[in-house]
Amino acid sequence: MGLVTQETNPVSYDTDRFLTVPNVLSLVRLFGVPLFVWLVLGPHADVWAVVVLALAGLTDWFDGRIARRWHQVSRAGQMLDPIADRLYIFAIIVALMVRDVIPVWLVVIVVARDVMLACHVPALRTRGFTSLPVHFVGKAATFCLLYSFPLVLLGHLGGGWVVARILGWAFAVWGTGLYWWAGLLYVRQTWHLLATTPRVDRRRRD
Image (cartoon, one colour):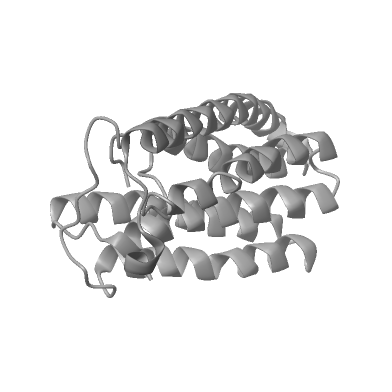
């Protein structure tokens, strides 16, 4: 959900409830991950797999709009939303790599970014954070990646899907670049928090 960085606007939540409409949409999106993997690797139902991704993209858009418009921004939602996005990206690239649709080096580049961010989580926890607000660059990167690989998958079918393949790879290149740019912004944000936020006493935190 499109909050600005911690440096300019502290995270605020409208509700502590877990069962909100945006959170339910995020859970539905999460349940679609194994379905997508099965469609791609099992029956090779690529068109249906693309439909699943399209529906996931719609739920991603709607949960953010609803959370802001109906004041349902929650701590759980701030965690579920990026988790769902990253699981989809990971599931897509691994499934397409197994199908030889995308190369291994692209998977390594994308996964390396998330590994880099995961290494900063212990440092964030010393300041009382488990995650950072989603940056608009990160959302743009996620959008590009989530919509690029379905186009690449359709282009893999051949025939009249050549245009989809070209557009898909264009979005994949831009999305990967933005994904790393957002990752570096999160690293900078983490360093800023470490420098300006006092350490949380472990006993009090527990």
